[in-house]
Image 1 (cartoon, rainbow over the protein chains, first blue to last red):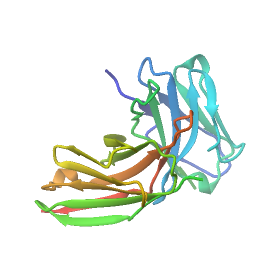
Image 2: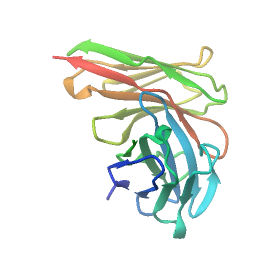
Image 3: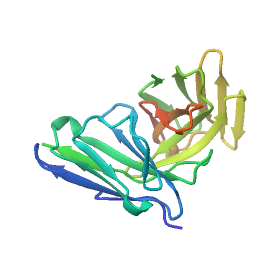
Image 4: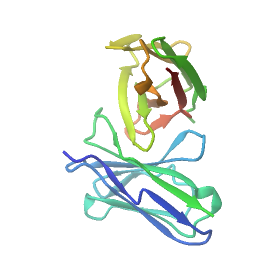
Length: 113
Length: 112
C-alpha cells in the first residue's frame, strides 16, 4: 500500500511568488491534515479536511494560504504571495478517522528567499 | 491553547538507555503520542498511550504518563545508532476535530 506522498520535496522561491504544494493521502482515507514546522520549532496544525470539506482550519496563519481538496482525494496548499516567514517544512497526514493513526508524508521543504 | 514542550537535544552512548521527556498543558488530552522522524523521512508513529493509563511497554520502548503533572516520557532501552532521529511528543484533545498538537522535537544523537 502506498503511503502519503507529497510534491515537491523541496521548493525554493522568492518573496512575493506563488507556490502550490500537493499531498496525495493514502487511498480511502477520508481525513487529510496539513501541518507546518518552522525551523527548530514545534509542528503546528494548519487544517483538517474530511473528504472535501474543511473540518477545522483554525491553524491557517492568514489569507495568503489556501487549501483545497476537490473531489476528496488529493489536496493542494497554495501560498500567495509567499513571505520569508512562510519558510519551513509542510507535512501532510491522512487517517481513516476515529482514533486511528495519522500517517505522515515526508514533507515539502519550502524556502522563501 | 494547548502547549507541548520538550528539550531540544539528547546525546547518549550506544547500549545505554535514553529518556526523552515532554510536558503538556491540555488536561483534556485523550491520547499522547511519540513520533519519530528520521532524516529526509516523514513522521512515524512509534507508540501512543491513552490518558487513563500510566505506563505502556512495547519491546525496547517504555512510555510513562504522569497525568497529575502532565508529564510524558519515552524510554528507549539499549539505544542503537539507528535510533538517532528527532522524537516528537504530541497530544490529541478530546474535541471532535482530532487535532494533534506537537512539541518542538528532541534530537537524539547516539554515539557509537
